[in-house]
Length: 69
Image (cartoon, rainbow, N blue to C red):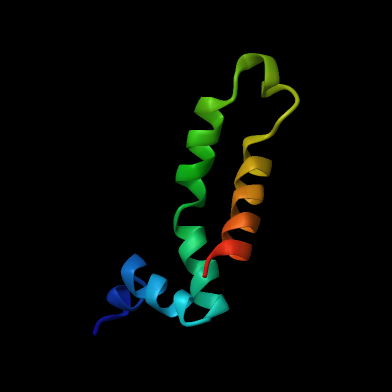
């Protein structure tokens, strides 16, 4: 197994489901930029000055971490 495949999303999911907190953190980090882009695109102009996309991503991560299993 090469180093890249050790950190493939599917492998991280397996490890995270087994209780590996580090793997869960790495899994979430793989998607941080994508989720921020989605949040940025979905926030209406009216809310854009009041809500930061990074805060929404952080909230999503907290929920994912809490409810992952």
